[in-house]
Length: 192
Image: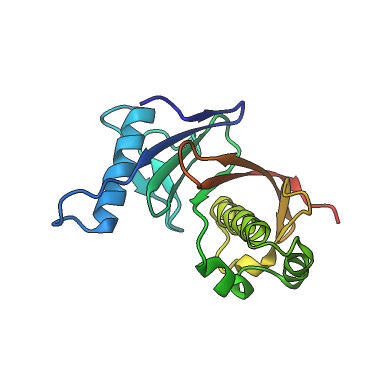
């Protein structure tokens, strides 16, 4: 398996989450998919561990930032190419985002949602980008107690701010699916 997406700052590895034997839970299938990606990126002996805050790292490679994400059908591993903190999320369009948007959109973003093109697809695209951006920033921030509504996304979806820290955002379409990927990289202090 080769990297699916390569940039100057990170590499993204993707794989499907197999349906597998009925004896395996979804969580077990996700863990198997993540292990496969980690072995592809770091070698067959590589193992995932977690920092006390829950963020993943690869044993023996703590200087290389990583982020893991799962959607209903895919598993993603983002591997940073420098020491910048990284967070990544993958998601497919789903109606639940509309029902729970007040839990992750701040008031300015809720206003933007009402001002967006009134088509269902435009609203879903907006919600999907906000959700994946906030999840990616949350993972990169590693800040206890950070709420998703505290993360502000720029109008053009290129940056985010979480408690004074700025993050650069990049979006990618996942190959052969309707899923989108967002990667957040710590960029410096936010200037309002």
